[in-house]
Length: 456
Figure (cartoon, rainbow, N blue to C red):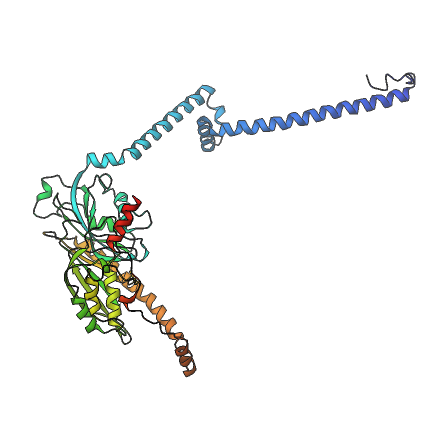
């Protein structure tokens, strides 16, 4: 009952009053029903969206959709409800089988390569341009490294047998960040086409996988495998190496090569090189190393009146940063800043137990030239050799183009007026040189060991 109906002054006998009341009541009722319907419509739209989402995930719906698209009609008019359910079950079974097979292929890849393939212990000769790499070894957790790129290639080509430990992996040298090589050697087990008895035939490459060609196809442009050879089971790339040879490239401007070579000859022989390295008192306790030869030889490259030369240093083994420290001191001697006798003083550990502080030579010109082993002869197929030659020619031309661009920039910046030349001469400030034997020194090996024991 409305408020009007309970009013004692309400006139039921007046038809106009009754008409107005009926109209208002009807409008109110219709508005309430409209509001209720709008609310229910919103709820149904939300429910419809949820059901549509669930339906799109149903396999039978996907089957129906594909059939509808193919036949151009509604599959429900052709297939009954039971048929669609059957299709759904079949689709789910196929999907489950496909997932199981994928898991088997993914999880069982290493086991398959280990159990079902023949393997062979081989040595690989590696070249790399080290400028963009954080060294050769990957243990430092810095990427990219040469080693990490090599193992990516081994996994991609499915040549790898197990992990590093299972493959008995070893490397000859741990070159530092930026250092290059044309003769690094690694050894490990790789997948083979040949059985055990066939691997001992006269021609080791006959019928075998072309490791050089296969790996070079997937390696980055600044890494290449130069050759491979079978290795004896007791072979270790580091510990069976007879000698290593490093080459350091440099321009000869303002350097006295005769004096440098004379000073470098003082390094030949077995000496304690703790003043020519970065000391690692935790892991290294013997700093005696044997340098078997030292020479300075010219290269073919020139730049104006300047010519490229190379220091070639050969030894049985080297300490951390040893070559770069040796080169730094020889540069000081070549510039006339130090006497060749400073070599004798730094090799005399009794009188110079602490290394003077000095900056190492740059890592970019340093090359691990070769690693020597007994009865190890690297080879590659003629096809792989031709591909290597083409690749290196292209790389050389690419870098020569870059050099030509920088040379054009140099020509455009050349001073053309006397005023500019005199201004330049006024701006250049000569850096004073502090003699090595007068510089502050680093802690000695004994002091470092005592500090380590105190911390422990």
